[in-house]
Length: 346
Image (cartoon, rainbow, N blue to C red; front, top):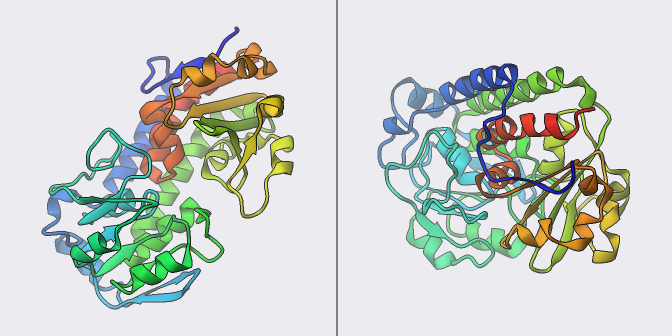
């Protein structure tokens, strides 16, 4: 089978066993999170959940910038990091301000997999070019900037506005691990147990798919991308690679050798594209047309592409694969698992 297989979203070819396992896990994930309809003016919900959250304060969170202590449940949260707003929503807290790093079609900056959506639209804020005045105007009592650059000046300016939960220790340059991100935000919002439930349900979903596909164990994989500036590949420090490792795949050793401990991606020149070759090659475009990958002569010359062992993903699926939050991971897993099964079939 020759040529790139392109995936833009939901796919009908899905094994019954995978679908049932993932549907059950997704139901558990969603039932373990707070209902956004219980919120009022950005507070963390009512009833028993609010009482449990109140009992979790004061909360102390270790960050790259030291320990941050939150004395009481926040009422006005601004979520600026990669996926921070979605995690707050999953926990029943509506940010009054949020950043959209992936350019979602939804004007509120969330994907279609998010169950707890906004009842009142947040103020959409910048990402790399952030207006601190706009943040301050929202009068936040907590700022989440957990999966972010970890830039000291950025943190100093944010923390002068309100208590700020920055990147995890050694998590600068967007290297806060997704599991750490969940735990830090859940703790900051007074719901550490809910955070652990979310992670456990995600782990169960991956374990179910991996168990059904033991032949994936030990096969090599590469996660690659192309932007207007050129080609790149992700390292083991990035959650996209971790996604496939959780299914039994192993990082392409040639890419692994190129990446440093503080890099989540490496640049690949046109002359180096054969380094992307692996048992499974997953690629996606970033703010360019997918044809700039699928019709590129260098890409088409990679053995994995010639043998049909590649997947090119776009749209909501690429965003879910990239985001790393539990709901997004389960959505991407449900869509990708049957396609991977076909692609690497003996």
